[in-house]
Length: 216
Length: 218
Image (cartoon, rainbow over all chains, first blue to last red; front, side, top):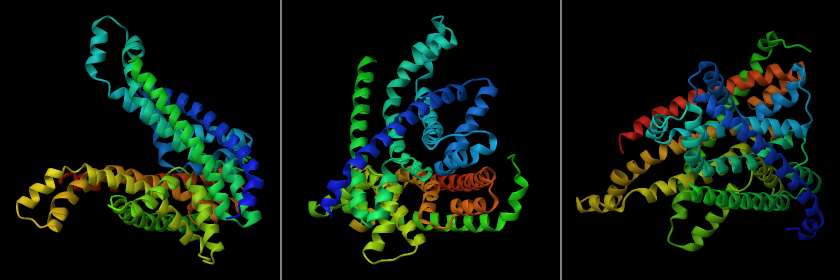
């Protein structure tokens, strides 16, 4: 183990870790928005909403994230979509995780007892009101942890944006492996940052979960 | 530059070969990740902390880091210690280890979840220790474990695309080769995506059959 080397280059990894955090957090926000919209659309009675939502989930969960990313970044210009690596990374990861989050959110909504909807309707609430005031507050409690699992998978999965030359942790690790021939040191160094990010994030999810459980 | 999907048939051969390599890669990694998952699970249930801890530490490290990073470690790391394996073997090792860790978590909790009374009942009916394990505990654990392991295997197929970065000529890298020849990324990534989608559908079907078969032991 070459500790002198690690001591010299860790600041570059710290800088790259920020990029990993930025890409991941933006993608998680995009994924939550898409997942939420798709979940509501897939539960709609309107076929024009339901069908595209189901297709989105099926296609993006049924193919590798790497292929989706390459299609967006390298294939995008052919259909007039010109994105830089960072933007393509965020959008590609966000669309991908959105499909998984849709299933999580949908499952949580469906797990709320049907009697709740009926009771709400009997009390004279409209369909939107029932969803907003009765179903979603109860479903929210159940979706925090599984959405956290989705998000943590995304943080680790964000490594794939290194293949479109976003200068994040895995890209930096790969670059230093090629220039120093020290794969073990670089792996350990990058792992420390990934584990730190994932640990802090899990702690945050746990806190949110406790808060939401307390409120309801 | 507009889209022209009529170019695809000219490259059918390379895509077909890539598909076969993806299938080989996935099937081999599935097998080793399941076998490895059982081994890790058993080791983590061992009475001796000296055996339990290193496995738990390894599992923690591999569950907290990206597969891509593990792929770099294994591919370049094996070269450094003098084992110059080809990229395909390194890819199988990385995928197997990565998913073995996740599988072992699933298998371990399933073994623990089977009620102790089941074992005691089997023993009091006159079954030997081994028979009780084989006829009572394992079938029930298998039924509990099949849906979760099935999801892992479906994830494995999609994650196998990552080994293209270390130069395994599977479907993703085959598509890239076709692209560097034809300069048509959009068409070929759509084609590769469609092939992955079909493989995924087939695998999902197989998992569903396995679930139904194993559910009878519940």
